[in-house]
Image (cartoon, rainbow, N blue to C red; front, side, top):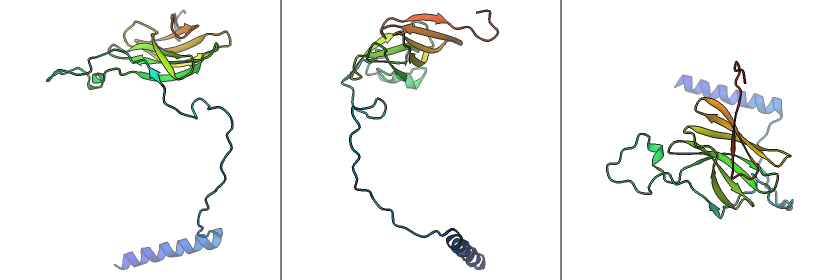
Length: 174
């Protein structure tokens, strides 16, 4: 009981010293009533809205039979996909990249307006993952990632047809 009183007394003394030394005081926050003016059209990544259509991959049946046991429980979600990066397309529109199960292959979604998205296969190799995308002034888009344990890059002019490129690694002759 004595220890509690002393701890409480020490806390009160420290608080009093901080208030006196720092000029701190208790204040009530004020709320602004100023409404910020509109700065123009929506900005990608800042202003969010619902897409009208995003094409889903066909990976598994929507319902599983009773007693179904799969190797990995995360693969039980029909239409599952991972979109991991997005870039503008120099010709207009957007390209998003990622990967889809069940064999984890690189995929892309292309949209002319950010509202409706069509799905395109980037690579057919199992365990290929597109994890980054960038657009160039030449009108092309490059996606980077890996296929198995090797780095790989893919390029496209339209977000739909992709070409695979090997990427040299440290210590290789490439």
